[in-house]
Image (cartoon, rainbow, N blue to C red):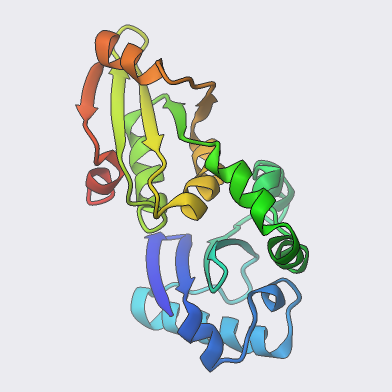
Length: 218
């Protein structure tokens, strides 16, 4: 179980196959609050308290769960100071990022070939951002998900940043899952094969090929 502090109100927990096997937990169970998952959550919060001073007693929490593969999952845990804000935060999460794990497991087992064909058609995604700080925030969150080729461009005239992310052979699952996080901070751009060529000719290139990897260290 790997814990990382994103901010004073948010942590990230990555559970791999070994973590789940040791606790005899299936990914699908995380959506239902079983006794085993409740025990996992208690241990997780105790570790977060010891390592980061992340205290969440009597504080509402929002938990986002993103499967990284069939046997691993990432949990984003956010403290919500005002419970009234919870519905607003949930409504801002794209629908593709809200998952029914039991249903997803069935889909993967019965329609695996169809899913792979759909994902293979998606070669590149582009998002625009109003500030470099937004891009840095995204980089910190997505660095553990994605390690492919991606570049950052800047439109000086409109003071906008464009992050161009390409799919690599070993990042198909993570590549599809990136959309949920990127859309929380930026705006998705309808892309084509010539879009990045246009950026290269008309905009300043800020970081080539390793934008997320480099910005995540800032």
